[in-house]
Length: 273
Length: 277
Image: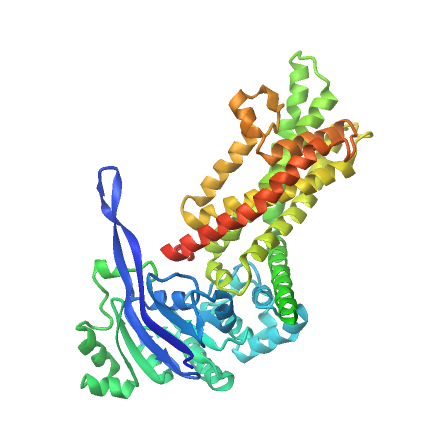
């Protein structure tokens, strides 16, 4: 059984045109994912590379049960993501680019109530929360401070702790180090590596950090304008495109520089850039 | 059987998480709570002083009765506002804080989530309303010796079920329309204010509004509570107002859950289950 099995997954969004036609703005369909298919083995770490608007976050949101697809299937450990949502929700957790917490509440309070949603009692979390915060390198004495007083790097560590607290078998990381200072970025990457080994977790990492993808993942995929162009080990990817670096491989695969922002039409693709 | 017991345990723990989170928020926003309470106090006083104002202008009214009638209307309206606001925040506040995706991807049954919000809203609302009522009653030295507060609480408890059901229906609005949902919720609240006889008897309304008032739980809640406090009537005497509340509650909760479910599927289909900004 595959940890993740995605077949011909499609998602479109309705977009309003800027120009009005009469009183109403015209709407058109914009494809965010176009027939994406791939599988992941248990314990594997797969990185998906793509520019803003390429469909990375749409893929993560579909696998997190936050979106319904327009076509195709997705299974996590044999469970249909869209038909067995509650079962899948118990297996999955996620770290996104935004830390996403109640900012006035402390890290301990945020983790505490979130753990209840996964069936963990106060007795279970009393010791577990300080332990897990310590593991992610968060200064435990600051666990009673409001999240608004913590740096972005600290908040992201709490976000990792929140995801790990529920012991997910599939961890979805959606640009977890974007916007972090170099030191925090290294700490978070180190921790991802550690939990991958110690937790026996399967990790889907969506990123636009090429070095991060190469350092952490068994296989690297390139998602471009909603299409998954390839998914293979970084060395094979470079060999296939006769490239020295992943950046060159990305250019060869997509015809665009990695750092180049997409045209307006592509940026609009997504709500979920 | 064991599987069902485990599931039930998980759901109850999840429900406690909803209550816990809201309690943390009240604690962390304590100054906001105080400011909001003082605003409600000032607002309610403004309305309740109308009775004295009418007398001062030469009108002949029973000031004590009119003041109590207005006070009940104002505090119940305040209570209803709190319940609706907390339920509407199920989506709106989470969207603002950015936690909405984490809450909606958690393995927590939506009915449990919404009922948890409703239970918190009722407990918080009852405490806040009781304090508001006591402070203002003291302000006017009202004579409430014959009031049947226990019967009034029974009516409020039964009405709260309907209020939660309607609150679930309005909670879906920010899910469907992230920009205008909250405002649409205020419109629904405003319509209830007009048709439910909050500050005047329903009989003064045009006939078509009186028909509408029969489907508003606030109509029966206000009438029942006024009879309990002004006339000292017991639960048996208030049955005429209690049974419609039970009927509306039995319909409103499943309907609210159904409408929220439809709204959630719509939001997942159209990509609206996401943070603001």
